[in-house]
Length: 62
Image (cartoon, rainbow, N blue to C red; front, side, top):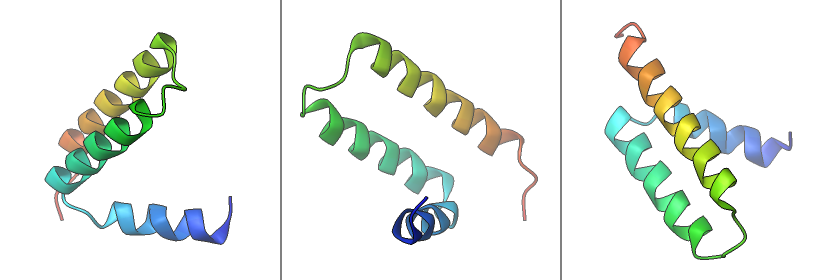
């Protein structure tokens, strides 16, 4: 993983759940516009998004 990617991931972890949901939505919109993803790719992305949301719901609150 590059340092730039690691920094982005670190910053994403600091977002609120609502901000993360918005980020996911925006990334998917921009990625979908490229036309490079298959239905299977979208299914995998959706499953990953739901897993992330489930993890956020079950994570201890600070």
